[in-house]
Image 1 (cartoon, rainbow, N blue to C red):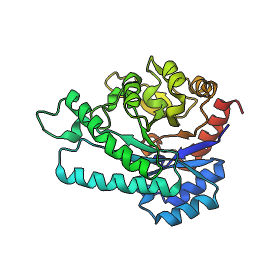
Image 2: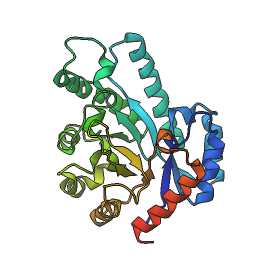
Image 3: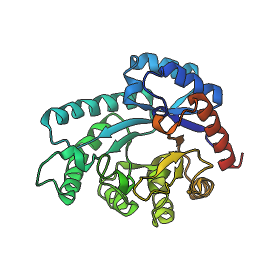
Image 4: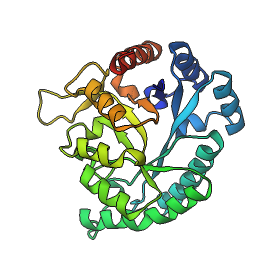
Length: 275
């Protein structure tokens, strides 16, 4: 079974990309997910050299899309970012370019920006991005988001919605993040029906708060309420052979050392995989 990839989002601001790559290589990770911040640290050619010297693949580039900006200047800047991320994914041979539609707050104070209209807007904007990515040989992977992320991340919130989107766009793939999808009653059927359309799987534990007003948070893979061992087994049984990527954000570290958390993630993944 392929080794574990580690997403760069785990690093706080100011944590050098080279240190992150060293942490991953020393822990025995097989790849990395790269963020816009990581890509801005050095030229792509140098990043590629740093990856190759450590034998690290690129499981994902994060994140394109964000189609809902109500501010024209932000929308224009996003188009530039999307183009640069496509170039990076192509140059680095990424398994997928993560694509997030954007949240309700992105639209600003437009009174016509109701959720139904905004979801339609995302669908209308996707084809041009799919075309641009496909022209460069890049797989675009949409990421369905937990409903708690509607305000700031995305309006694609269920696997049923995702299935309908896949039916509309043959070249589209899916980034299946356990944090966002573990609760969905369609998860088993979605995996069995769309295994070939899953370009990257993101793993994490899911921590629920005792305070019902608090959104779920990420934690180590063997902690929390979601059964990651069953999730990985389900994917393996379905025939999924793509990358598994651990995604934890810097604010989830709770004072822990980045390198220690990466080592734990690699160990956890070996347990989940039965290795």
